[in-house]
Length: 389
Image (cartoon, rainbow, N blue to C red; front, side, top):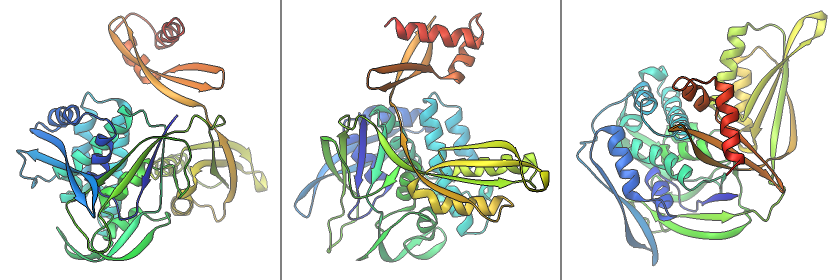
């Protein structure tokens, strides 16, 4: 089970995160080719070694024919990704990250999300960083991402919206509900894109980590500070020594008897979009014999506040119940199998001597439309192939 740890002592940006993952073993040319095909723009990524306060660090270098002045909104980004040949998990994670960024900008600047069409979301740099990180996490087969507290600086920054205070308003909005640390350093230490990558991928923010260290790398950005080195330390761990794979999560629940099905569906969509692991509704009978929905939400520790805010904002409830619970999860990896020339992604789950396979249902449906089999027949055929390997 691979764990990625972001040791943030002087901030994080999108290019620093991507540089770190490339340095951990992802082929920069492979990412360059994928991004070039995705954007229809020639993109060439490389990593250059430089010194930061006498520490060797990796700086991401980007060569592109794009002038970086092209504006794309969230729907433009979604269309590009959904029509690409990228893995479903990479597409979903990329869209989730862009949504976090776009929603924050929309709220800060008081405009609908669909009207957000500005440099930070649409620029080629953001596409490179966000899609590149999502792709690299998949290639490295990362099971869990943890991080120390995001670090923030002070001062001002020049943006498309004029001079804004640091941390940038969007950065603060994205980091709502997450413990942060502000230090006495002038400059933008954590960028909106860096914050969005953390929000979309980090399971838990804490200083502790455990496991065998596979590799550690230092990445940097273009800025340099006198007080501290502009470095992000990223550590790749193998924590298979933890046979229980246990982590702590929150379980939030509430009873609602006065919302329509449409409103309940809207609430579920919003809870998932801000990072809830799972949301389910159970039918029950409540006070005054009214039909009631019990809402159960499973969420990581760091998102408690934003989940509570979302429940109160988009539901009629006046109170919720919160439980801290242990969760035991099976180790997992993904394999691609070939079924009559068609690729099906299969999730392999392991716990001690227990092992089981779970083909991706969407892949089974897609393949069933190509060959003369039903989705359930494709599903069990895929399991049979895995079992015979």
